[in-house]
Image (cartoon, rainbow, N blue to C red):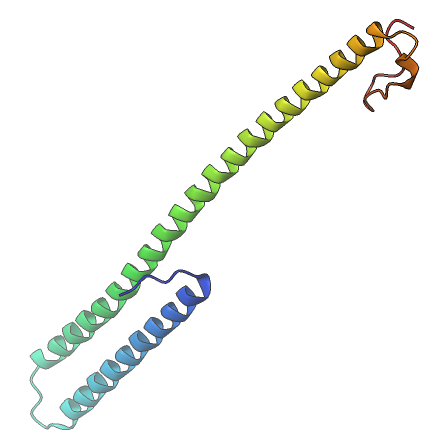
Length: 142
């Protein structure tokens, strides 16, 4: 079976598989009921026949539920993998944001140092040098 790549395909695939399982269960239940009714119509019913019918029903339910349980467990495993991937990506994004904030702070500090150095070299021109918008106004020391 090919693996669906989109959530819509997963839903369609699961719906199709569920419908086929339901149809199979309904068909087997119909067959069971027909056999059971036919057994009641027979005048010489054997006592072991009820046990065989119950075992037949139990095995049928076990087969059908086994397929459904396996499908649910597969979907749970896929969702767990997606959850782990999302958690790892979230942690990576947080690290990237922290690194960007540190880099931004370093760039701001460097810009302030450069602006202060330029202001000290040309004291008459310092009023015309645009200062960074955060925290630095005019020349230092005033």
